[in-house]
Length: 262
Image (cartoon, rainbow, N blue to C red):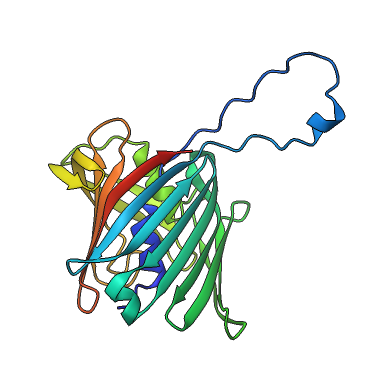
């Protein structure tokens, strides 16, 4: 099995959630700080970390870890068990965004078997363009470049799903979010379908099952379906993600294992 970089990004990005930076403490006095205090680093923004178990064909296939701050997100996908004997996967994805989760950049580092590629996307909001550059890290050569027109506020996949978590969508309703991966750009339909009870290693949740129409040539060319279960409350916490594709990938399911706030 080989999970393409684009599919890996989508599987993982949907589990991110926005975190708020802590408020800066007021100064204790107007006196100049002592020299040693000037060397102290600023407090780090609040971070949410979500850990997911990955299941493929009824076996444990790996782990996905997401960390999100106010304007930055990181993802790590590692294969495990039998899947690692077929092809060892270690993918990382980092993205930056501005207010409203408007994308500014993303970097996907994909190590799958003997293949090691890096894909960078820069969103130029002054020209409304997305610039894509992919490189073969092992050979140290550029393998693909591309530019595409985008709206002034477009989302890479992580920012798009972060945006979705801030919105309320009930079964029977749908909305569109502008998304670009640097190679394609399109308004992607998100449809809320049913309320369902979902059991995961992290517990039982009342959730709304949504479908994101990213595949079938909209953003990614592969044929398939993508479903996301968000908790039916104000948090809209992603507790399960399922990707249904044709052979040889088949069905891949992510289930929430642990939620942490650091």
